[in-house]
Image (tube, rainbow, N blue to C red; front, side):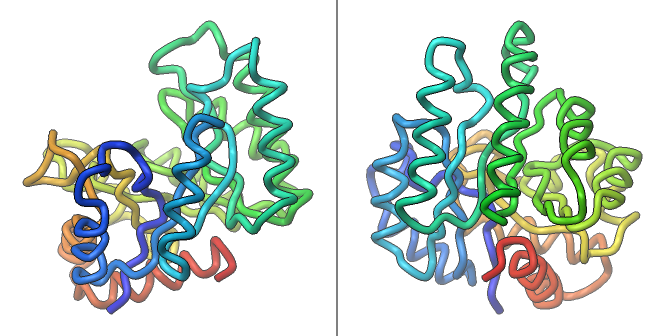
Length: 257
């Protein structure tokens, strides 16, 4: 059984102590593929070190996170993202998107930066990994406008409802990233998982954030992905092995490896 964690910030300083042990726990639980999203230039060195330390297991992305979008630094950060994509292999442009949870005043700038990075992904023929917090409509409209059949990606940490899920699927070549929120009581995400074919989902942790029950509120890690897979298997009335196989196959389609 091979599980794929399509979104984990394992280079975070939250794992400074015991990172190797954490990785061994992940591998022992069946998580053999982990995709690392970028945040901004302050995290790039740690991201690269993590990817280099675990070749064939950890796969890096490169993009500018919406909460790091700032008028004073946006152009410099975007130029760096583009230049890095020419220096080494990344497996997606991400994580990118729009976040209106913390600050709504940067919406127009976040929209511009997101749209430019979507265009970069199309140019590089890479998928996009989308961060959408309190901003599904805003993200969806940009993706829909840019979708010409060549764009693919994932709405990371999907936690919206049935209408939004239908829109993601209708885009074509887009998946929903399902993580620990699936295990939360009254999250409503169970209804989405039950309503749609498993071929539209990939698994993720978003570690160190959003740990699944019974670890909710504690530091998340990739080994906990098995708990998300178990919950999905319960909802789909199938085995964990089947969920692992289908969602890992979906991750091959998403990232091209």
